[in-house]
View: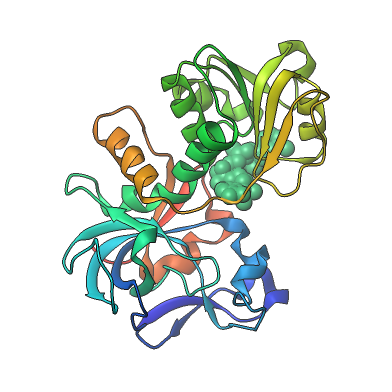
Length: 305
Ligand SMILES: NC(=O)c1ccc[n+]([C@@H]2O[C@H](COP(=O)([O-])OP(=O)(O)OC[C@H]3O[C@@H](n4cnc5c(N)ncnc54)[C@H](OP(=O)(O)O)[C@@H]3O)[C@@H](O)[C@H]2O)c1
């Protein structure tokens, strides 16, 4: 089968190439998914899990991409809960071959049913940004109605999901980003927007929750704004600053079927809109994944119709 692989860590994104790889086979509790659409996170080539398995052994050439929407074509030994022919979407294991391929083997528990009225391209855009937003807000940040939230990168893939879910939960949402991001952040539901290049974060006063996707100095300034009892949630690695009287949490998104079901239900009934910047064809994937072709929002590769 055809797949997008990396084998040279020092080459970074320039090392992506199309290669012929063996069809995957299904292990215990796996399914094989025929990939229709795949999502890619630009920072994947920086993650150690792209290069090694869980025992730290070199696993190159590694197939990249971790978000998938497709159709189940085979079940491994003992697999329950999904059937051959079913439309599914989900998040592939970080340490296994990924989804920028014609087929992927992954554990059934990492997948949820994809309703027939949700396009594969939309399904593939949801797992990382949707689950990250859900877990950051509701599991780690424990947001409550009436609380205020500062969400950085509010026009980005994660930020737009955070904004919409937080609004639905009854929070007051202050989005941030670049000057050009203002209208998009407001369109996705932010009550206010702070232009990080020209406005001053300090002027927004206190907030109950900060959802940080940027880190560094922005994170340090934000931690100082958190009210007593509030929380800083970071998805950029170990926190660099802590609120004086509150919690600081950093996490890596995990797959969760029940949360995927909640997210896709919101897509169907219009409570949630996905943020796709660019859809590329599989044969042209290397161009579509080139940083020069990037548009704000998720890059999705359509592997088959
Ligand atoms: N821990 C986890 O589980 C997890 C999960 C998902 C994502 N992540 C990480 O979280 C980060 C965001 O992911 P994403 O998919 O939402 O990325 P994204 O779609 O690129 O969104 C990030 C947004 O923040 C903006 N931004 C970045 N730096 C900025 C700065 N200094 N000032 C103003 N705006 C800035 C970006 O603008 P530009 O596009 O103009 O730069 C973009 O609009 C990435 O580093 C990703 O790897 C972690």
